[in-house]
Image (cartoon, rainbow, N blue to C red; front, side, top):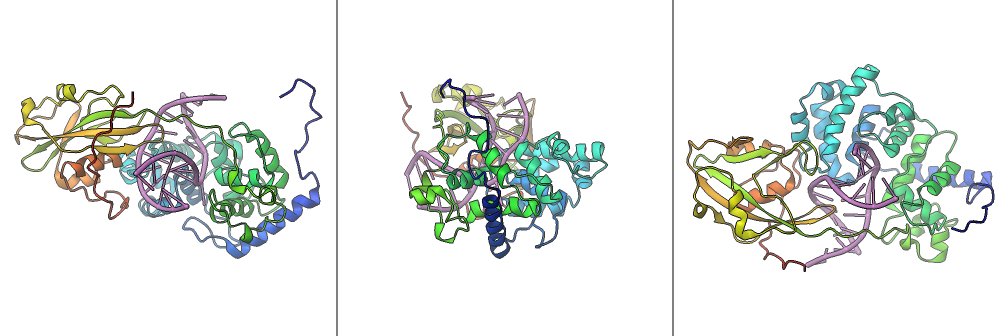
Length: 395
DNA sequence: TACTCGTGGCG
DNA sequence: TCGCCAAGAGT
């Protein structure tokens, strides 16, 4: 950026109102013909239920439609209204959410439901600002609910919309720095009416036509005005700042098994990674993990060190910001063994119902314990945990 | 601003 | 096989 005074701020492109009108008309026409049918989406011409819109938007944050659908069905069946959700126990919510990931969403979902009941009498507020003030609702979700559930003239900008707009205008600026500019471009398109349809049309276009890889430009209603397509490299948008990769972390997980099949389980701290979810006792997960001293951290159950049997192979799991390898140890414990402070025994047939994140399901499966999918059914025939050799420590 | 926070699918 | 990515929010 130079220090020279830029020209007065103005819409970067398509300042011609008739051009914007043509674009929105083309997109809405395409949407009328090709809109997706989704469980939370109202029929054409009908405004959707705010509760369903909100619930789906929270679940869809950084999550695919395919993964969300069964969870959405489960939640609407268990909690038909916001009041039902607000009245539920947090743990019941977490158990139903198990497997979907980003568990802070489930806590905020519950907190938001209570806030809607307490602050707004059980009805979602119909303003962006009031929505934005609720737990778990950020800029995107506030605008999405406002547009889709209340038809307010706003444009939610998610990853789909970012991709569509950066391609349409061949925006060279990298994300996330380019967000203010994308906001201006989106606002320039905002139609006077059918705001909800327009928002969903943008997202459908990004999800089905203007995809990250191999976009189907020949089917796109915006093919003609799309600068990136004309340039021939739509796939190279949006530009993004490279992210640094997380270091491999390792740890040991301890599966204590009673003769009656019960497993020792504890609850993770409310905040942070897998907050509030269940786990078997583990060491810390760190790059400096030493397998030799792992047993020093095994739960105190009166089991001699040699009573712990190391299961061959490791459980691997990849979080957003780091990969993880867990060495799994198993021990048989007397039926009268007391659970150490902070942990508890869970009968084998009740393990599936615990709020277990998938990494812990992998650990139990690796230890030879049958963990029938809990919540909706995260994935039926999940391939067995890979028995891989531990990787060499990087440097 | 930049990092933390899951999981599954796909090319 | 593996890096990328999916309807982001909170700090």
